[in-house]
Every structure is written in structure tokens, then in C-alpha cells.
Length: 202
Image (cartoon, rainbow, N blue to C red; front, side):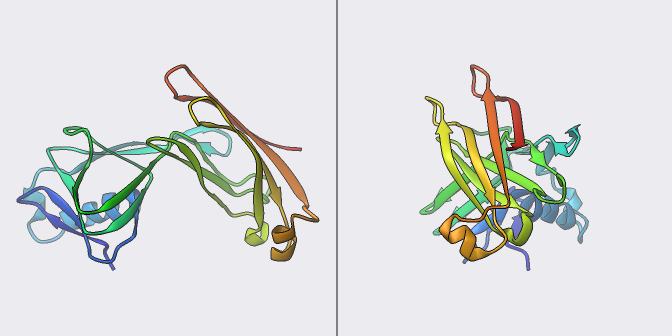
């Protein structure tokens, strides 16, 4: 079921009542592309442009970015919603119309990591507009992992973290019997853009 409605005449993407989480690619961008193909919706000016997602190195893709164009905006009314992935506006300082809502926009410049040695199958991190936080780690064996020894720079950007993998939930809960340990390191330039990123097994 769609989480949004499109108002082509007023150039609005309206978040439905009760929605708490939006995947920008799936719930906004792809929904809009499907909407354009229905009825006579192609008469309205385009809502999005997108780029990124290109392979950079083995098992790694560049982040994807989604920009609202032609004065389209996302309307959020009386909701608390988290927007995951990179959503911006070409026309405004924010892509949102906020009516009595709490909006958490998690944008990331961290590359997407594809399968590595059948153990670490994906790591995605999100950077909030004010501070950096880890978003999630996907595809770990048995889905049991623990992050520790976080290191941040003076701008609150994560520069290093230890990732431990466990076979069982109990091992993860008690931080015992890890079967693999990784170290993630990130380096940023003087304007805060990611310039080096790696995950290595210890």
C-alpha cells in the first residue's frame, strides 16, 4: 500500500496519515514514476531528478541522491516521520512543508557496501543534517552484530567503529564468542565530504 498521495496540480507529495517511516527511493521516487504512468498524470511537470548509485570499487556503490524539482514539495501534516536516504530540493532550502510534524531527514554520503566474503553483506550509515549516526547494518550472519569503540571527530562525524559478529542473539547480548571482528574507518575533507571509507577484518 502506498504511503503517499500525489497532487499534480499543486505539486505536492502528501504523506498519508499514520506513516512513520519513508524510504525515499521506494516510497517517493519509484511511487512517483508509477503514478506518472497512470491516467493522465504525465501532464504534470516532473517531480524528481536523481543520480548516483554507480559502482565505485568492488562491492561498493556511490550513494544515490533524489532532488525535488519544478517546485514540488513533500507535505507532512501532524506526523512524526523519518525519511531515509538523500532527499533535497532544487528550489527550496528544504524539500518539506511541515505542518505540526516532527521530521527526521537522514541523508548520507557513505557508500553502499555490497556482499563481502558472505559474512558482511551490506553496511549503510546515515548522516543526519546536524550529526552523524549509524543507520543500520544489513545481511550479517544470523543478523547478530554489535558496534563498539565509536570515534567521532570535532564535527561529530563518525570516523571509526568496531563491528563484531555473533552466531546467536545471546552471544550478542552478552558480547561474547564473536566469530569475526571488523574495523570501519572514514575520512572527510575540510568541507565534510567523505573522501575515504573502508571496512577491514581484524
